[in-house]
Image 1 (tube, rainbow over the protein chains, first blue to last red):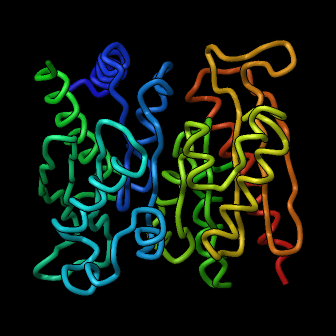
Image 2 (image 1 turned 180 degrees about the vertical axis):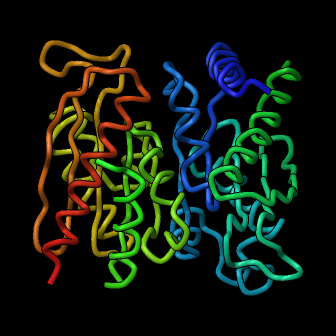
Length: 161
Length: 161
């Protein structure tokens, strides 16, 4: 996958169709927002990004109830889903993306290993969750997640009526 | 300046002194958050980042009154100051950094050219504003701003009692 080519295609395609996106990133720490905003014209498409690194930030900025962290853990399908849905609703945009995972090198356990990541992708019609494990350094981990997010965005664009 | 060495020094130094930071980025689009969170252990130091690309995001997430955009412009000393102060206060951390500028290639004018950037740096004791102009591509522009932010953080750390 040519990342730069895909980023440009997504920014141009979304811009022409007046589709706006908002991101809520945890383990990728702003990398996805950074890569999208490298593309000139991104401001027509990218409305905001939230780097909700702490659970307090997830509660304050994304209205995720603290019960959910206790019940499911911050790295869970449920939290990724809420992050994607709430960033979309709170920003009043077409697509919300939520990313939560364990970039490592520490922080994993048997059930939730280092490299685990959940990505939520929310539109007005549906929310889907993608689960991956990338055993890699923090920087490579971020790049792998970017590619997965770009696939989700590309797929949406190709099927857009 | 060795960026990676400085990033590590800042994360380690802040972590030892239990100093937490929060960022509000506009023109750098999440790049500063991304670079800090590349360092293992960053989660002890980096509380949250807000990529307030639209003015609506600046109002919603950083409580900047829309009057200020009309009166001073989104790229202004006043907005950088408010971004830094408010992200610090709203996150309940020690240091808030606010960045607003014109990454280009379009969007500038005679008074506020492409490459102009204001950086706010806020602590409980003071807020300072740094103004720079970097005539460069979007990606080089972001790198130049990162270096300026690292100098501010390094300076704070070296003078920390």
